[in-house]
Amino acid sequence: MRKKEIGRAEAATNLGTNQADRVRAHRLRGEEARGGVRPRAACESPDPARRREEAAETKRTTKGIRPTEPATAADVETMFAQLDLRRREDIRVAAILVALAAGLRRGEICNLNVADFRTHEDHPVLHVETLKRRGERVKRLVPLTPARAAIIVKWLSVRGRRNADPNAPLFLTSKKHYPFREVRATARTIEYQLRRLRSEAGISRRITAHSFRHGFATRLLQGGTDLRTVQELLGHASIASTEIYLHTSFGRTAEAVERLEGGD
Image (cartoon, rainbow, N blue to C red):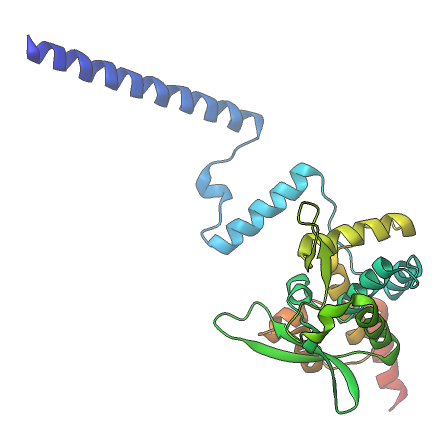
């Protein structure tokens, strides 16, 4: 009797498993027929990094998110123009824009401390801890123009008593919940302010924090700055990462050939 019960239980389990397999196979065939799913071997890359990139691109496409575009010099100045430098909050946002326009990553901006704004050989600089260096703590100096440095100086003057601590965060944001105190700025803070300024400026293109970095690198390269210097300013471990920002149009290529022939 015991053997019969065990046999019936195993048969029921196998039936349930086989039925579930048949349902999954039926759904998969239906999705493939509609073009929604392709066989795994045909659509997936064996490289995990490539698979993550493809998944992110699929997610952006599904949600209808537009690709980012480099921020032009006009975009940067238009955003600055939306700010009233008589208001403490606008001075804070303007100081963050200064760091963005200098090509810093969001995380690097959030990690800046008061002591990281300094002078080096009589030039105002930001002493930035470079991110994306595995197992390394690498610092780089990012120069600022006097006009842009003056905005950070103004922010420090209105920032309050915490300036006495050199290890205090350079950029702050207010917590939305009790206790309502200022804490280190976050990536979300930066992106929120950029969306607000983009809306107020009437800029329809999708401009993010990385757009400032992209535009900064593009303007440097178009201005004739050598690739090695741009790599150092951006904090790239590999020069191959810097080469991504090279945008050579046919017009510039033709102009270069004409200059070469004109010199003969």
